[in-house]
Structures are given as structure tokens and as C-alpha cells.
Length: 311
Image 1 (cartoon, one colour):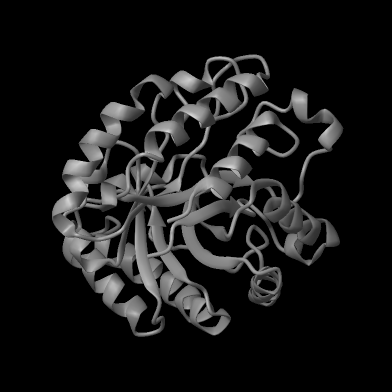
Image 2 (image 1 turned 135 degrees about the horizontal axis):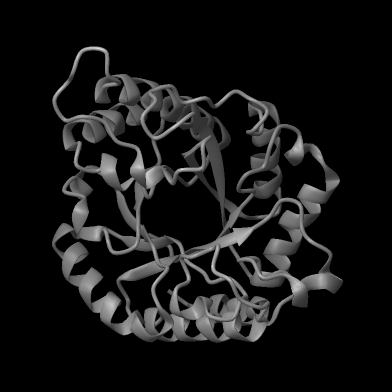
């Protein structure tokens, strides 16, 4: 597998957002400023709560098929390779890792097979789009920790996706959960979210290597990054952490992450988090405390690292 010099783009984009010239300009800037060769289009369907079974991928909260295909084709026209990542959020704000149901069916209670039927329909839909658009990979879920124990149903979902899509299939587990998935053999590429504390990258890479090595499959960090906020380098997964805007702390985090992960030949890349389709004003970059790197020192660090990677 090629090294994935990638960035996640367009998270939480709603109906019509990809139709704007600003979204195309943002994608051009992503490529120019970061040296990315891959772009991961992350989509957010919605279900009402972690215990409801209907996954809605047709509302105003998500880009429609026509504009997504147009943007995928535009990315290809720029020379970018594309990865489609359809995932799901809960309308009530609960993190998707807590989507969960009883392991033994109970009458009148929501059931796993109902949720998987709806979620599989969602994944099949975007598998067809990935095939039509010529995407290099599809990532069939993200950080869905409580669902991961349902091995047989995930295997069946992957089988269904392969009926519609002939490219590489991956699943993005959460940080620290790489050993939680016992069906890695069913995917082509193993991936996880690399939001590890700045001081602990070496230890976490040692741990992950022991988990993924027996599968003899490529591995990459489908997400990784750090807010530009004081204190975030120690807990980069906490997007709500209180702290002052601090672009230098974000930059130092990226330097450390690349220093350690770049020495591991089994790490086959990154899908960094994240680049918005509708960017903030670059003149205000120093005041932005989010994961974005547009106009911040981390932008240059990412570009230099991606340009240095030869494998």
C-alpha cells in the first residue's frame, strides 16, 4: 500500500456546503499548504440517540450524493486520491462509541439486528458511490467501540460492502482500542485514531505494533491531530478542553508525532484531523483553538513531513 499522506476534509458539512466555491478553494489550499496526496471525505449520518436503530443519511445535515460526487471528481482533477468515510453521530450529542444494545434480544427493546440493518444500508449506499467515483478506499466506521464486539455482524457488513465496492476496505477503531477488534482479518487495512499524549507516542506505537503485526496487513492512523490549545498536547482527544489558543503547542505535538511514527515502517500514513470545507479567516488563525492547521505553524510541519516521506 502507498504511504497515505492524507487529511480529513469536510466533516460536519451539510446540504449544499460542497457546492460552494469556498469549499473547492479550501480543498485546493489543503493540497497546496499541507502536501497531502490523499483526502478523506468524512460523512456524518445521524441517529437520534445511541440506543435508536435508524441511521439517517438523507437529511439536511449531510451533503447530497450529487454534490459529493462532484467534489470527489474535483479532488481527482487536482491529482488527489480519495477515501470515503461514512460514519454516524447521535443527534443528542452522545459520542458514537456508546452506540449499544442488549446482547440478548428483549421484546419491545431496540435490537442489534435492527441497527445493523440500517447501518449496513447506509454503508452499501456509499460503497456504491465510492465505486462510481473511483475512490481508493472506504472506511466503514469510526470509533464505534461498543459495537465492535458484534464480530459476526461486522463481518456480514463487510461482505455486503464488497458486493458493491472493489477497492480497499478499512475500519477506524478508537485510540487504545486496537486490540478490541477481533475481525481485523476481514478488512484490507487496519486503522485507528492516533490521539495519543505527546509524551507517550513511543510507548503507544510499541503497543500497537504488537497487536497489528500478526495480521500482516497495512496499518495507518485514519485520524490524528491536536487542537491548537494550551494543554491539548497531553490530551489531544479532548476537543472541549478549556485552554487558551496556542498554535505553538499544536506545532510541537505534530513534530513529536511525526518524529516517532515516521521511524516505524509499519505505519503507512495518516488521515490528519481535520480540514474544514468552509475555512476560518486566515488572519484570525492565531486565535483559532481547534484542530484546524490552516494558517498555523503546524501547516508547515505537516507539509515538510509529507514531502520527506519517500516510501
